Image 1: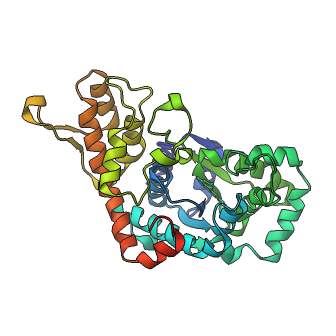
Image 2 (image 1 turned 60 degrees about the vertical axis):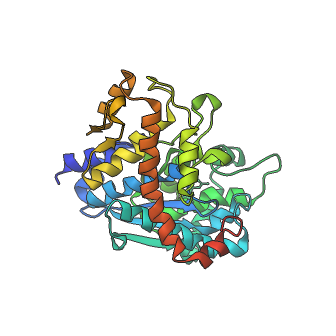
Image 3 (image 1 turned 180 degrees about the horizontal axis):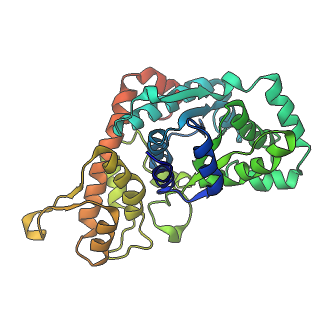
Length: 347
Ligand code: STL
């Protein structure tokens, strides 16, 4: 792959690259740049997480050395979203799920490094850097940069203020040239780009993926991760998946505010490309018979012209999601004890 092809591949379906020129220079000067993505190991993963996880494949095939980090300490620091004694089990579950999702794309799990935050976040250099950064920025600015990620409430705990500096220092500890994440992490990483050069480190290139809105459509507001009852989790049963998709907002012919189409664009079509197949929408003969689509824009166009009924679109989405999620369920079913330990309320 030449430089231009790599750039195109890395760029597609991303929301923002800060800065593209820096990415270009990095790819030019370094044959094997390093990127990482972290997740705080708190709640169960949901289909919103599939957007960046699927995108990891593009980075790997562009020659990037990729590390996934289970940010177990961060899960506790964020308002104790994960209890202290469950941090280890949750980190293991996150790693199992990421591997299962990558297998859906045909990506071997040996292609990606897996680390746990607590494995490397106690070093002397790590904390010396954090202490330095903590005195270069105000409490107010730190809170603003972090509040899309950390739940502060009316009485913010100190833990939430360690959180962003640790996340910024993770980049350095993991020797990453690129910080890859959903755009919800933007505030923290942009603060990092400002602080790291001040303490003698290079700032990372940041690549942000879009967030999937909730299934009710944007009018109700909110990203998938904050719509507890309505989000589709990566361990939902087939029945739950079909039910939630069936109830999703999807107005005939409307392409602007349509969470069902959004999921096709950001999750299903990227997956189909890896799997080298087209989208098949199954319909009875009397409703026009089966149709196939090669690209998202073909599907979008057809839907906007009223040629695809919302019900048929939803059925197809539920089927594709079930195919992904069944892989995750099957993998976790082999280790029911771990799931029960990590999420006593779910198992
Ligand atoms: C969330 C939600 C989400 C991602 C994260 C947290 C990421 C956390 C994180 C922590 C440390 C890192 C990198 C990322 O080094 O979608 O609450």
